[in-house]
Image (cartoon, rainbow, N blue to C red):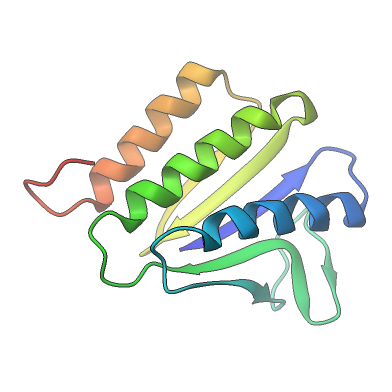
Length: 126
């Protein structure tokens, strides 16, 4: 899963700091790895420094059936704690993209639930 974080009018250092906090939280989960995403083609509005894209993480979920749910829970919690800063989020997994920008809490919850349903094995609880 690829995660791209941004914050409206934020300096690169601020986005890097927010990304570092999220990475630390994700590393506490049952995931194989969470690494900075190497910079390649930078999406509009994103910044790249020193070969890595600021605000971009690559999460390797591993074989745990619960890992995706755990990652989504942490990201939702992280967004909730940083709501006043108006962060935007771009998730990509298996070609499926979820973008959250200036959404209400209800919209965020619904978007994450739909994303989980699309990526949960048939018959399992998201």
